[in-house]
Length: 124
Image 1 (cartoon, rainbow, N blue to C red):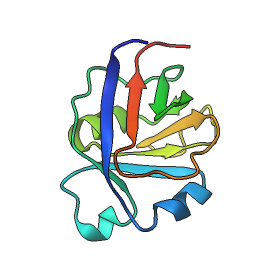
Image 2 (image 1 turned 120 degrees about the vertical axis):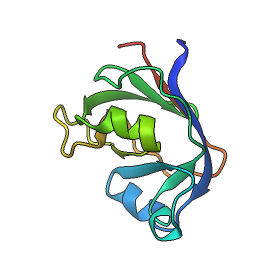
Image 3 (image 1 turned 60 degrees about the vertical axis):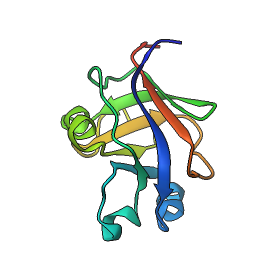
Image 4 (image 1 turned 90 degrees about the vertical axis):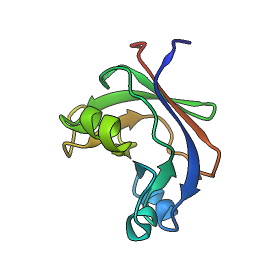
């Protein structure tokens, strides 16, 4: 597997994350995050993004691999500056919102502290 574009380890899972997963969405945000926002997010320590997010790349969440199908026009900048994007597990080929990344694959049942996320440059 290629060197990750961005990697993160979950440090906190907000109380409303399960609700968003039921809607096929997951919000990532790097610490520090105000608590009223953190309740809706998967919080992680900020990482370094080494390139642009593009359709065809992959995201690994623990052992599950998702193909990126669409990337909003500010998603790369938001991830780089804030560690913030919204993941949508709907396989759409056009981004619904500027900060959204769409993925193909089965929605995670849960997200837990210490879960690992890796974005990979390699296009599939």
